[in-house]
Length: 399
Image 1 (cartoon, rainbow, N blue to C red):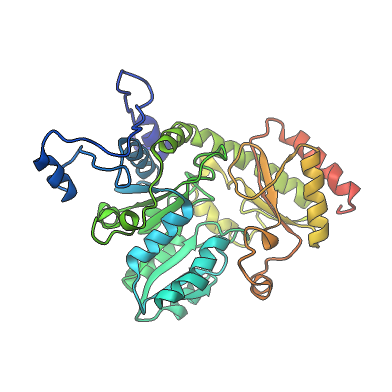
Image 2 (cartoon, rainbow, N blue to C red):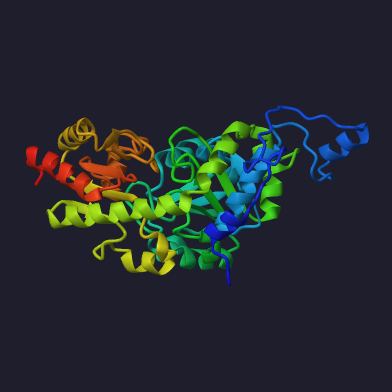
């Protein structure tokens, strides 16, 4: 019987130093050697199982990396101190001066700002296109294009990229396809669709408790080794190492990801259907009206549903703010950025998580001021949650 990603995570067993069911935490910044020869060999990368300095790696980080590589079905993985560290390090490892990147027009605001404002300092240019339309990608390719960058489900508009078609385009032109899978862990396996590099902000669904900032790059052993190279590896030289204690904490939470993703999806799907029934403009990939519903249905691992993210549009920023404040007061969740928490989180992305994007560009891509992004929580009784939200909406005359 073929193992699924969640099964592969489940099958990993790391014993603690004294037989603990959780692996021992490596709480050291540096490691000792029994011989000077072993130290020099470790510096050269020729010794397996030896640790030098925790900026390079640590046992705790390697345990988590093995589990995340199993989840994404890649050869290897490298954890980082943040999702942005994983994104920026991957891009800088591949690109040099005069290179070109094609990116989705709707990506996380920090990613957008990095590509729009920071990489041009290194003479790296980016074309922003609608990656749900492969023809637009083909038109943007030049002889200098090194990366096609997209999110499986875009932040915050929930546009779905056709990863399989994009991968075929990328391979034809010898371009690396880098995919951010933060919104859809376990639901989608980009490596199986042809992605070369898969990135997550571990901060979100993977960790699930909103107490850790971390990221990961999952890819071939060759690319991960390049990131770790002591002479020109972006991970190694930029110093974006994840703390061992945090790695240990995330590894524990990762064990329940399959359960949490199913509940996030179940709850979000219910709210989306009910909001739509109430006449509220709702975007959720699980609704048949979503432009990429059929595409997403083909690429998801169906047992995990369509994800825990949805958006509604209440018309104006003033109404959006009032609704969010009222929902928070009624204990629906928190008016906060981020996602994947066990309580529902909501924000108006145009003035928060996507505020790096200019108003003109927001308007062009369809990011309206009245848009509210929901990361739906693990509520036990989602019908009760809906009734409270509906009451808030009625009081504000949104419905």
